[in-house]
Image (cartoon, helix red, strand yellow):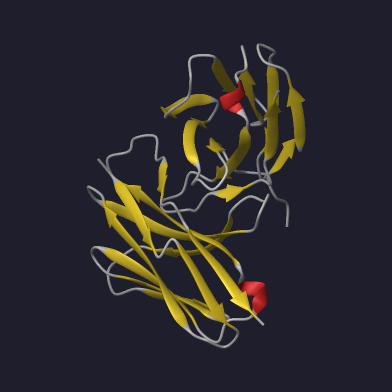
Length: 112
Length: 113
């Protein structure tokens, strides 16, 4: 069964304190790994797609990397507005309907 | 840019009532997904449609049904509502292209009293 786990469950950082979030996955044939940001009461907002091991994507203070078993979301010099829940999701080859399996998320709080 | 539109934003129903949630995907997106998200939980896949046909089914209760119409909008029909159905319901759409991501609406918050 395809599974996605994320760690830590919650993370508190001071403004400017860089850190990384982890997404570990077990899938039978990865078609894509996706990172989303979700603010309270809102829908997940798409950030990145990663397709193959070794790939990296960057956007402002965020950088996502991918290995064969996990992905990291690196946050450099975070600001309070980066506070949100970060979700990763995988799309596996065997899912005919192409449904996406989400991890439980990491709740990030950046304190000023 | 156009986004996924969901209506209503908030809905309050009593137990055993019915509810209909609507979703209007991004133009030219032919695939629609429905997710249920409880407080502090990750989105749980309910059902998806491609070109107006059901493409996959997740943990959708038998009391729920959904369809996609000729204009690609989708409706989630929920009957015999239970207290445990209270949640945020998200619709997401994507074009049928390899590895294209889901784009989510801002959800419908359903409260069953």
